[in-house]
Image (cartoon, rainbow, N blue to C red):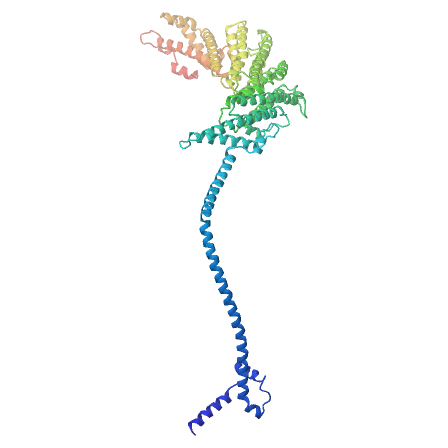
Length: 613
């Protein structure tokens, strides 16, 4: 097989192997061919090439016609562009000419725009300055007399003060050369401030006048008003005085109401004097405490003025309406006859006087003077009552009532009165020592005086000493349980010691007489020789005495109420006898004497032991 045949064969094979159903381009060509090829005849196949060429020529003719139209459009566009280019060049030339002509105008425009911006900035600054250093029409309207007082009003006052302060600072500044404007502004602000403070003062005065007992709270606006008025001390003081005057009337009205009105009026307690006085004083104390708290709240925001003296003066003024109704009622109660009640009332008045005086601290207020007067009246009342009762009981106190040298019932009654009064004193804290001393002096001093006077009417010195000791013993027992009795107890003990010395002397004399020691003691003191018979008689009686020491005790000694007193008398008198016995013993047992050593069977130490000394 030749090479050409082989090539043909490969081409035929390639054509046969080609799949036209999947070749998109081939399919499109065949589809287009079917539109003009017609039927597959021999003639058509022979004319296929000619047909294709005609078809190609027709397409080219169509393309040429379409392209000719495009060419015409493009030429028309080129003509338009050429015209536009000429117009642009003409406009550019005209603009260039115009720019040259308007350059000066533009410069002036820029200059005017710059000035306009400067003016606008200056306008803004001027508006800001006016807003900051001037009051707006609405703010000026708030300063009018007919406008109300509210938080905005105080904001305006604060703004006025801030403007004044800032102007003053700017004037003092070393960089500030223009001071006239700020001086004018300061003067204007001073006028506004005076106007505002005048309005504030009148409003505050009116508010204080319209206070009533149903509305005792302090309005926060009043506190702000007082804060502003503190820069005007005269107006500030007048406002405080007006407030105090109104509160004084309200306090008096409240006091009268609580006395006579309500579910439990205080006047209903008049049959119980202590509760009556206590309720009145407690109401006054609590009311004055509230008034002081309100005054402190009123000036709470005032930090540029010392208000302590004003507060105290105002509190004194508020309390000045109370003395008349209080004094009248307390004086009526002081007509009571019960000493304990009168003393309780006196202590209540003194207690509340200290509290209220510490609260007011005015010094010369009417209420303080009234409380001092009532204290003096109440003290005089209970002192008078005590004096009358002591005098009445002492009139029943005489020697005819004395049985077995015991204290009469009148003494116990007075001591019971003393205990009752001192128990009231024990409940009070302030000035307790002074009160106890005063009460004890009112009762014990006349009682002791009457005891001594009564004792002088008794038959013997022994009876007198025993009676006084028994009375003083009961007084000591009553006073021992209370405070501040040290000096009084010392004086009573000294009186007891004196009576014990008297009673000891009487008892010792009795023992000396009963033991036949009188003559022996006289011989002993003179240094003469003893009578042996008298000495033996003494020793005989002395032995009997040692067996039963109590048999020779005075009967009055056994009537002593205090066992310590009985023991003291016995011990002291026995010591006297022991001392005499020892002297006799030493004299007899002296080697130089011619007495029989066997006369004394007991040594002084043995006697001391037997007597329990």
